[in-house]
Image 1 (cartoon, rainbow, N blue to C red):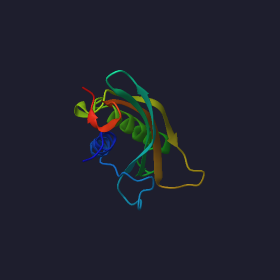
Image 2: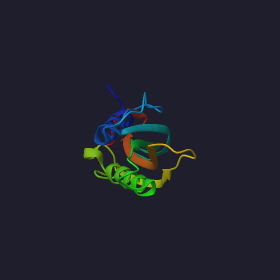
Image 3: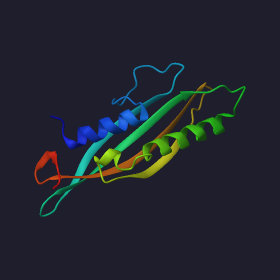
Image 4: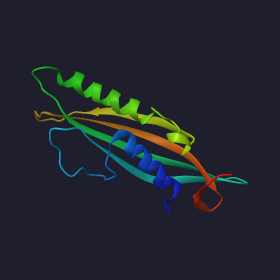
Amino acid sequence: MDSRRELILAALATALNAVRSPYALEYSTSRVVSVTDDDDVITSDYDNDLHSMSVMLSAVDVFDESTIERSKATNALLAWLQQGAVADRALGGLCEDIRLTRAYPVYSESPSHFIAAIVEATITYRTAPDNPFVAAP
């Protein structure tokens, strides 16, 4: 049985067609998106635990400089990643909310046909007290 946290991360990765790895295996001619997570901050209440989980979404894509400017392609990738992250803010009822906390394009100092974007978010969800496997009542 997976914890609520793992179910949420799997749902987010599935929604973005992402890998759950801090480092993609290899960049090629297709978009690569990865989801990485950090520790939870847990606030206990009478009948539930409120979790706030930090996640980072990273996207790398290839662009053709002859058809679009690097900055426009990078901003389009960033917009796509932001929209995908909050398309279903509750991930089908698994969490309460996804809040974007930071979003930025990544620019390479050397010329490259790769572009990248990063979105940081906080996902809030509730579990039964002291049981990360059960949703809050």
